Every structure is written in structure tokens, then in C-alpha cells.
Image 1 (cartoon, rainbow, N blue to C red):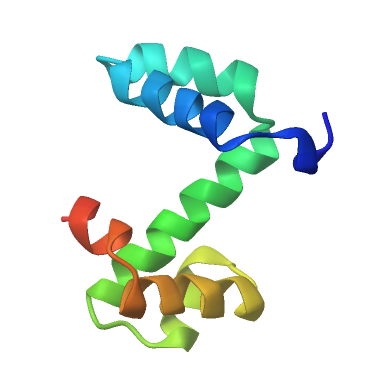
Image 2 (cartoon, helix red, strand yellow):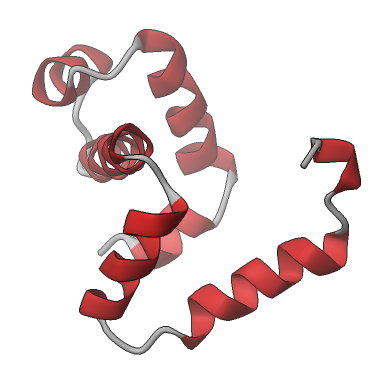
Amino acid sequence: MAPEKISENMVNELFELLASIENTEDMELLFADLCTKNEIEQMTQRLMAARLLLQGKTYNQVIEATDISSATLSRVSNAVKYGNGYKQFIK
């Protein structure tokens, strides 16, 4: 399905489905079907990078710990600085 054919309603359905999952085992089952192993690893890498940035680590320390690209780290850093998701959900 081409991106332009994905409606806001369809995206909301995805978020509602994710919100309805009650445990990590069920989430793991869904993500195994929904994402490739590489996509899951990339999301994990971004979460790790955000956690380290929130702990005050430098870009070099984050890259060394996560092997994240500098371009991706820059996007994560902007989300940490100006977004709300990482700050709200990473303790």
C-alpha cells in the first residue's frame, strides 16, 4: 500500500491496537509480525540513544554505546529536546 493511501483513520487504528496490548509477550508477537528484525533493532537503538541522551551522555558516548549513525542520533536528539514522547516514557 502506497503511503498516500494510508489515511489518518488507519494510523489511529494502529495506535489503538498498540494501546490495547496488555503485556510484553503479546507486544512481542505483534511486532514479530509487524516489523522486520532490523526495524525492531533500529527502534531499540533509538530508545537506547534517547535514554543515554537524557542521562546527559555526549554524542560520542552514545555512538560508542549504541553504534547509531550520527544522522539518526541527530533526529533522536531533536526529539529528546523538542518532543514529548521520549521524556514521558523513558524513566
